[in-house]
Structure formats: structure tokens, C-alpha cells
Length: 110
Image (spheres, rainbow, N blue to C red):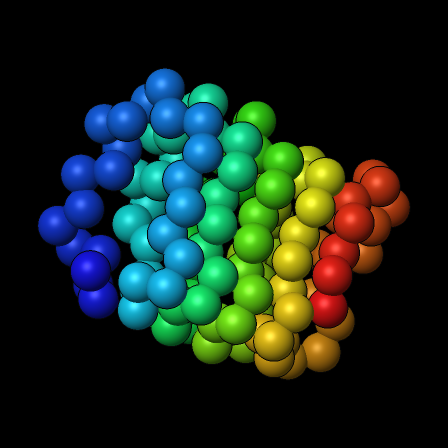
């Protein structure tokens, strides 16, 4: 699953957890925003360089694991997470979205 173009992921609206660890993913489709019940998204150990802005439209997402990816930046907005894991991911600087999440009580691991 190296690419993301043919992913019909948006049709899984009742999905609560999605674990995609170690799949060499380089991107996620914007249709991930259709996963309205998603609470846990595990994307660690992939090759992600960017995340879709549509992640901000996941109202129930509480845990986002981005460990060990190739991300340099984050979307300007993310859901009201409880935990965000960014270990072994080398972001450029300190994105403002991290400050906002921390102010809301999100545990951010870097």
C-alpha cells in the first residue's frame, strides 16, 4: 500500500480504530475525513511526508500516532486530540497547532 489514490477508506464510516503501522504509506487520502467515528489513528513507521488538512474534520479522533515518519510539517488544524505521538518524526520548528493542542490538555510526545 505505498500510494493512496485507490483507497476506498471513506466508506468505513463506523470504524473506530485504524492501525496502519509499517505499511510504507507515503500519503493518506482526503476521504479519511469520512471516518466520523474514528478515535485512534496509528500511522507510525510509514513514509508520510504530509497529512491531509481533512484530518481536522475527525470530531472523535483522540489518539494520533505519527512516530517515525518523514513529516516536516503538520496541518494548520488538528482535532481536539488527547494524545499526539511525534517521536522520531523531525518537524521543522514548532508548529502553532502543537501549542493549541497542548493548551487544550493534549499529551504531545516528541
